[in-house]
Amino acid sequence: MSDSYLWFYFPLVLAIMAVLEICRHDDPRTIVRRTLINAAILTGVLAAGALVLHLLGRFL
Amino acid sequence: MSSDSFGFVLAGLMLIGLLFSTVLFEPAHRKTGVAFFLGWFVPGAGHFLLGRRTKAASLFLILSLLYVVGLCMSGWRLVSFDDNPFYYVGQFGSGVTTLLGRLFAEPKAYPLEKFPPKWIDPGMLYVCVAGLLNIVVVMGVFNAEGKDGAPATEGEKR
Image (tube, rainbow over all chains, first blue to last red; front, side):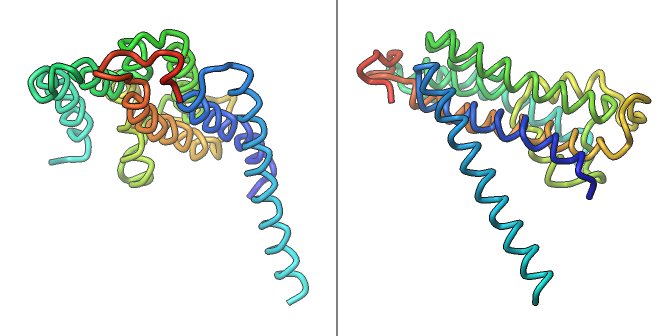
């Protein structure tokens, strides 16, 4: 898979998180803050999982 | 039923549900029932009906943008059942966009020249996610309802 697919990931995740937070909250600042936090957490989890798989594939 | 007619049938069911929601729901929740089916048909319309104008506009903008960008990336090509069954079903979360896409998009159009062909799959994913997110938005209509079916006040909002 090309690296260029990563560029499609960020807008999609931000849109998903924004919609979910808009449904839950009314304060725009809270929505933006929680959207960014949740997107960062999801990205971190996915990156950590990818790193683990990469290491497993390389050393096992 | 062919896969092509499924979109029309679903859009018809949405309209029928919208019409019958005035009968199916109790008077106190009638507006929410109408908002549910309206929101299913047009993203954000349910929240608009319940008086959440800003929230409705935000949801409409995000979901519409996601849908249009996805369609553009895939060369205004609809997600067909043969392309991906999961994406195909997912796009029906939003009624009017699916109906418009069914009426005006080219079912087997080639991708735009300025975009590489491999962008078709992410484009279809965007379209699918826009539909699936609208289902979440529609369910959120019940959270937007306040006591006795009235729009929620500031204190009742979650």
